[in-house]
Amino acid sequence: MGKPRLRHWIRRVRPDDEVVVSALYREYHGPLLAFVIRLTAGDRQWAEDVVQETMIRAWRSSEQLDPDSVSLMPWLATVARRIVIDDRRRREARPQESGDGPLESMPVPDEMEGLLHQVVVSEALKALSPAHREILNETILRDRSVNDAAEALGIPVGTVKSRVYYAVRALRVALEERGVTA
Image (cartoon, rainbow, N blue to C red; front, side, top):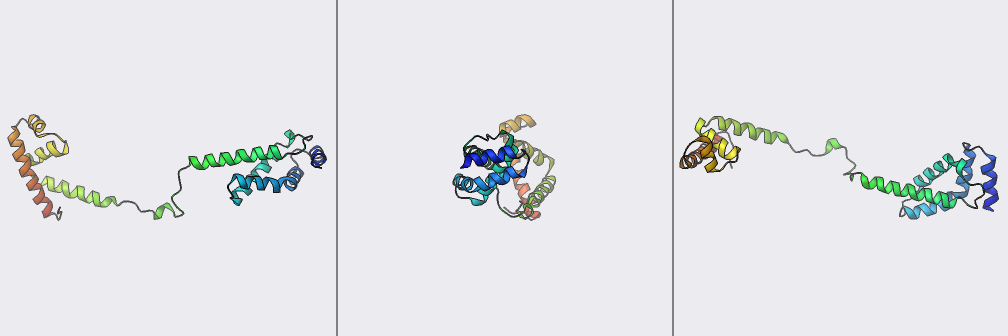
């Protein structure tokens, strides 16, 4: 039954004629949709999209379709299966979407707080004596050990320890004057 009908409409129409798609759709839509629904785990909307894409590809390849075949279902099923596989790969390759809301409504960390802290600390450091600023710069900002700081500044290790102690106390007072408490 299928063979004469296929031979009839494939030979009768031009490859770009919409009759090819109509005949394909009439004959194969139901069985192809049932097959694709199983491939898409019951997602009917996705299955409908896959069937449509399969029919479009069949229409584009109508000159290659074999008019002597009993059924085009194996060819259509193969095309549909490949489309589903490609869709899955595409979905897996994209990052997971975080939600439906626009990006403008997503919370963004407020960098103003950190900037204000930097300004306050910078102002507090300026209030220190040059020796205290220098020792904090070497030990805290450059992350040097007491021995390394002593060598870099050319002063004894005991002096470095003493200056660090008094510089930290002075910095704490300067920060408290500016409203920063820890």
